[in-house]
Length: 295
Ligand SMILES: Nc1nc(=O)c2c([nH]1)NC[C@@H]1CN(c3ccc(C(=O)N[C@@H](CCC(=O)O)C(=O)O)cc3)CN21
Ligand SMILES: CC(C)C(=O)C(=O)O
Ligand SMILES: [Mg+2]
Image (tube, rainbow, N blue to C red; front, top):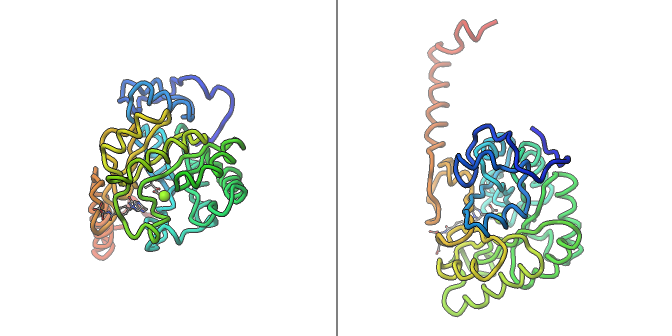
């Protein structure tokens, strides 16, 4: 797998290998050598919807890349989906960078975005800059994401002016769980105007896209109309430019109750449970290893 940014990255590539691209299989040959922020803006202008997924390791990144997912997010949700912490607040830059390095190193076409962990960017634009540079240098990601509205404008300006593309994230922002007071829909009623102002300010500050998490569908639709950058919804209805889900939710690996915005497209937990139990019983019975596995 190549993380190359060599010449020839702009044009469409014939090396799609027949894999599906966002617009469907027929679009595969149009898949760019590397998705760039301008491709995402083109999708918006053409009204083509696309999907983002989280990824935290080599094989999932490779699989989602080959499936035609144009943007992969190394989310701070690694906190609860990799490390077993109860909230995203716990994950550190030092923990997330190796995962981001695995993902960025495994993809050929996808644009890889890393979440800036809680506490690693809020203090100042300089702090945000130094953390983002670590992700770009040590992990090789192509962009970073941070949570917050108008208060994040100085950070977004500093990063974008330094050549670091920034994905914004508003609505329910899990890193602010304790000040928000729980996992709650944001932007209802007279909160809507403030959320729209946040999105507009972040776009003006240079953000290349904005995640809208747990926002009423009509508010997300209004924001999507009002800003020139792509909106990426999670629990924000069907009218955003793109959607994002945590991959373990999407593929049915995670146990327990699922947020309402999740749709499960596979039962990986069932598949792995059966595989592990069958392996164990074949070892117990002596059916594995067989002659063909023996030297
Ligand atoms: N596995 C996983 N999936 C996610 O979507 C996700 C993470 N982890 N970790 C980081 C954040 C946290 N997120 C979450 C997690 C839970 C709910 C949730 O339980 N929502 C409930 C209650 C909503 C309400 O109270 O109104 C729901 O039914 O949607 C929402 C967002 C989204 N992100
Ligand atoms: C759910 C997405 C947007 C996220 O921020 C994460 O996975 O950390
Ligand atoms: Mg996150």
